[in-house]
Amino acid sequence: MDPLKVISYNVKGLHSPVKRKKILHQMKQANCHIAFLQETHLSDAEHEKLRRSWADKVYYSSHRSGRKKGVSILIHRQINFTQTLVHKDTEGRYILVNGLIDGTEVSLINVYAPNEDKPGFIRTLFNKILQYSTGLLLMGGDLNCVMSQLMDRQPASKIPLSRMSRMLKYQSQEAGLVDIWRSKFPRGRDFTFYSNRHTSYSRIDYFFTMKAELHRIVDIEILPITISDHAPVALKWDIGQRPTSKQWRLNASLLNDKAFTSFITAELKEYLDINTLEETTPLILWDCAKAYIRGRIISFTSAKRRGKESKQKELEDKIKDLEHKHKQSASANLLNDLKSTRRELNSLLSDKIEGSLRFTNQRYYEHGNKASRLLAFGLRKKQSSNTVQKIKSKETFVTKPDKIAESFAEFYKSLYKNTDTCSDNKSQSYNH
Image 1: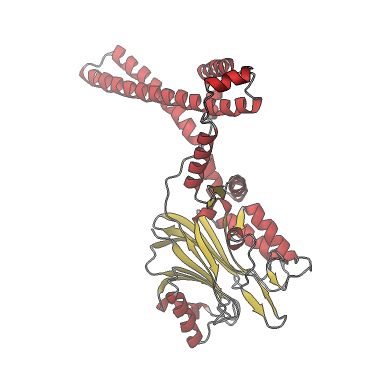
Image 2: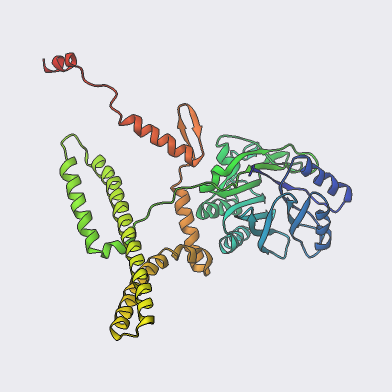
């Protein structure tokens, strides 16, 4: 799938049919796949009129008056989107839509924050994100506050950040979300809104995503201010499924396996006997030990799994054979053998299921009650904080995870490669 073009735009009212057509035509001309519109100033019935253009899926939150606020998410008719959940407020401030795009789970969140200093709104918003969001997350909209008085205002200001700004910074960090434009342009200064009243520019329109998913943003730009007094913010979002290497975790049940502990103790002793040398620092010894032991654990568990699969097949074949014989001859000995073999197979399968249940905890945390979802979001934040977003390799910056892994592999391969062998002449000169 090609990257999706997503645009966030504070349209400052769509009640006028002419302006509505202008905005929708602008989105169509920009090849927009998903549009986040803020300040639509439409009622529920009027929001339905947006469905008549290039978008056949329209989700919205209207203010009760139908003449102010209002947010809407428009999805192009060519996008294979299946909605699974819609959550919205009653004031036309935000809407959260979960669904599947070609089988990929996504959460789309469109926000129009108050233009007053209300940190409670940001806190409530992030609590709802924590409660309802799943899959790849993309939040866009007009947050009505800057995250840096120096970088996000023109002219720059020395006035302290508002409480809402500080709350936005805190909550986004806690949730593991990043300001996409700022992440792509750390030293950039561009703006999305011009205030005639204050004769100043500011960047108050944003896109956020999980830090660990930042590599999916192919491009982001702030477009010119034209029809509205805000600039549209456009990005390209690559949600295509990629084969990813799973993070290895130790199967904790192995720690109760005496055969395993004996095996690892012997392997570690052998490793230390061979590699404990004067020229080897403890740090290198330990780092290499972790990689070596992980390999031996994987080898042990693979052999153990193959052994269990072989044993299961053997028991199933034996049960089949005993059942066949018992059907022919109702022998008490055959029945006892059959029951004994079934118990043995049942015990083997129970061990297997216990292991499977242990690894379903993460799924429960993500889809269970609020406390568990809080833990799940904490885990996502932890994973995001450990994510390497970008590295410099051979004078170019690399951002895709697979390319980053390749660059690290190439670096360490080069680092530990012995490229300079000591010649006889050099050896003699050192001796003298």
